[in-house]
Image 1 (cartoon, rainbow, N blue to C red):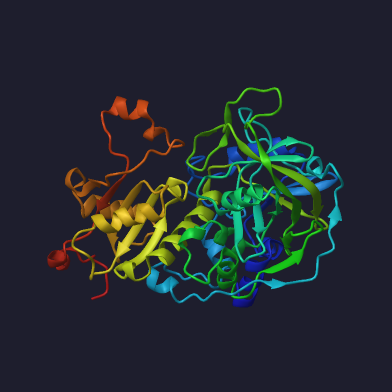
Image 2 (image 1 turned 60 degrees about the vertical axis):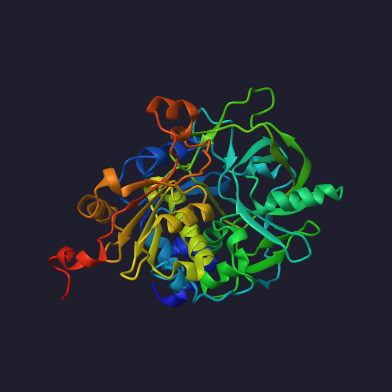
Length: 458
């Protein structure tokens, strides 16, 4: 793909999909059947134990937008769409990025789906155990008029013809902005953008709190795309939308909450989570009242099945960018960073170090999990190890470490509820209290000559 084509793909999902050669089209599947089919035949780890990348799978729907899974199911494919993304996500490489602020564009001609527009979208229920139908690739954009911007993805349960229930972690900027609006006695106007530019999807997975001054997620998306992201005025006062989104939902987050269950049903599970297990229903989802649903002509409705390579790629690239940007000069010894798909793009972090590395890796490991609190296991390797090849990382762990001694606890960590191995019952059954660790699979500098690979250039 040429740099020009990559730039177009970065700024428009439709252009990216046209450039995708690994595509299948399957007719005659309802949204629920399509989700089940994709999970059974295409989804990768941690949904299923498949080594191959996920293909782009399109399921046409009669009279509605086509349902799409798998677009982000190949890290190489997504990297090819982002001309500004460094090949190595080392702090020194990422520091060369420069923010590219978004620009205003004329409002696109969109098709109005009417007052009950949510019901006209092909929203699947991924498993029979799910609390209901979820928007899984909806990117919420909110602005407070004073320069603060929130851009983030959330699971959103359809709890009524014009109501969505959003789960927002306490650390999310969107939650902070909604609370501020509610304190003023107002709702928070937002747009929910589905089928967004790939640069936006990856940038949204970074942590706002750790971005350098002058950066926002939108300016980071522009840096990854090599050109500004376009925003247009919505039909709701105070709302802007992503100009190239396939589907745009507008509304406001109200000062009320709802349990993560359909009316009349008990609280239970939510939907499959990124780490491969069913999620837990929350007592108090934020309620978004929908005022408008519009689509591009011949729209593509993008969704994920939860765990799988697709979500792992987005979360992993976003997490590595977060860590690289936040570490800055602290990460001078880092040659590359990567979150493994095996950890859902969040739990398992690989860090390749240059020869000029610290003797004590404990402070760097503790700093990494502080910046990326979902990270659970950090594996340090040497710079000759390819982080994109998990067999290579395992080879380093096998031949450059004695795991009985080279695996170290990272103290002072809180359990993460969605990881069942961090539950009190599991820890009691295993007889352990350690939650996070790092592995030193690096060669002592004085012994490097004994560990030179046989086929490494002299």
